[in-house]
Image (tube, rainbow, N blue to C red; front, side, top):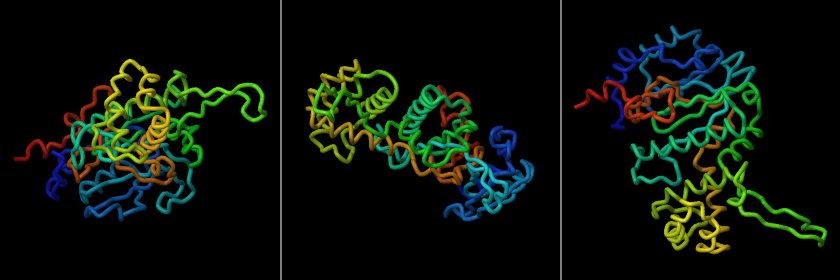
Length: 324
């Protein structure tokens, strides 16, 4: 499992198993407005600016070329062959299992454990995108080593990188909540500092949930900027308190100053869990759903049921099952 596909295996996949009927509807809609890119030798997508009028021409190309990797743009263009006259772009969240800063496994690449944790993370992100941001046209794609959340709500597809960056930071929990209230400039009255865990709604709850998830998945072997080995050990020692959301006691065990260091570090971890460059790039290309991720011999697959999806059951090509 997760071994590279040979040229012959790629041929078998695209000629015997791949079907244009499996292409998601959101990919087929406006297909001729998108740029395609291909990697034929495993050195990166250097065959760019391809355009297909429809799924028939795409099918012929894939069966003839059997590429190492196939990509499609998140952007729609009037002239996709030159990436000219940009119309709009999908909004994307990319979570790669091998790049998750805190994960329970110790594998060198990807495994069943970190892929499962990547799915947990994207499920939490989608819940926030739907519940807090109000987005609805959301599609989840298993990419081979992680997941792509692809959003096609019209109000977000026309947005610029700055807005996408702000939404990303909110959804990821990438900033420590600023919860200081009161008159702090005039010298009169009182000011109050609230902790993130004391407000169980809106952004403070998002940050608290993301931070709790990270703490629960620490193994003690992590190297996290701002958290020294002694602090890491104490966080793990006391984290059972968070099972009942006893954040105040947990903070007292850690110590106020060290707790402040911890939440700052967790904000950075939250952002690093998502590939931010992908989210803000209006002209990014992503793996084409239904294509083969040849580095790990897995199918790039649309996730229809994100609660029960298992890539080891739904995204394994036939040639992998037939290997000796």
